[in-house]
Length: 113
Length: 112
Image 1 (cartoon, one colour):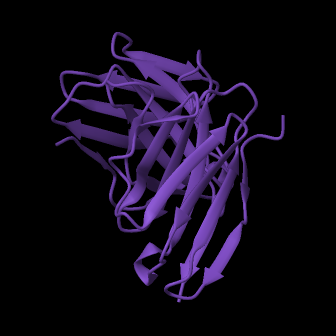
Image 2 (cartoon, rainbow over the protein chains, first blue to last red):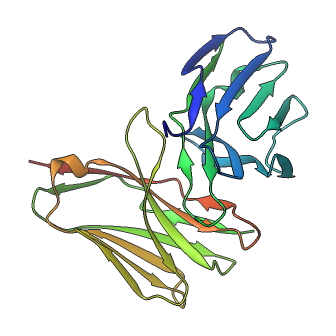
């Protein structure tokens, strides 16, 4: 398995634009997490899906953020409209049913100018 | 609310020495604790897991301890090598489902 695949690796966008980050989880993993990492706040959990269903989205900072998991092999995190303070590295991570460890993707570095 | 603290200062040690990193938490009792390694530009990679009823866990040159009374975990790298230079993160389960709280990490540099 190629691991968790995120795209794009880097995204530079102008304030106000819509940004969509994508994640392909490891096949068979039924839990998916979206995290945001910044120097100031570290790794913050944004949303958690289990079996494609959003379980906890309490970490989503504002209504500008939304996430979907239409099937077991794909998830998106959308920011609309984007703001400079959204600049961070966004990670997708997945976890199998019997495992407690999380497998992280390479991350998407988002810069909003 | 829960709080997780790791060594706030970067840690520099000489090759061959033992590196010791600290993870302290407050306000709740995790069932297990994990340590991850993160290299620049990469996602965290799982290293070790220790459960609340375990005092110590080892894997090659790595050792983790978990003191639920002190609410502290120590992560040791023995015979450290320059290749061990990275940021190390501790993660605690949230007692609900599979979610974790992560610490902010400690940057380790092993000097040849």
